[in-house]
Image (tube, rainbow, N blue to C red; front, top):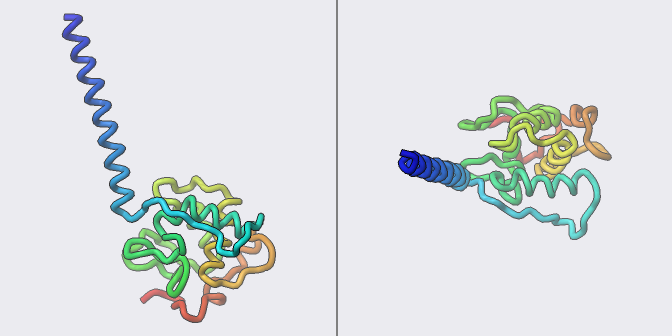
Length: 171
């Protein structure tokens, strides 16, 4: 009976190991199928700058480019963060976003609490401000001088500063 019990225990361990491997493969397949594959983002200024925007470039590459693309242009499944139509005030149709983006503070709060997918809430405030600075610059918004913080990000009106070729609301 002890031999039989050991065989049963070994089979159970093998089944558990196989189940765990299957779960990992399924999770990886889900990320690939959703278009969230690793990407590389580089500085385009030709030199490294030790400022909030430069940190935002690096952090964007680590946390956002997988889904939104190296340039932030998105695709059929993920919204654009740069270029025409980026960051519409109203959530795009079919989007998981449920909040309006009227100010930089709205964008900060959304990223801080909802991004990145499957790891929402893991970015600290400093990193989130850096990502917001980078994303807003990529979307061609005018930003105040210096680093963004709680006071300055709240003053960035996405409607007032919305680039001319980007719609203020999605239709």
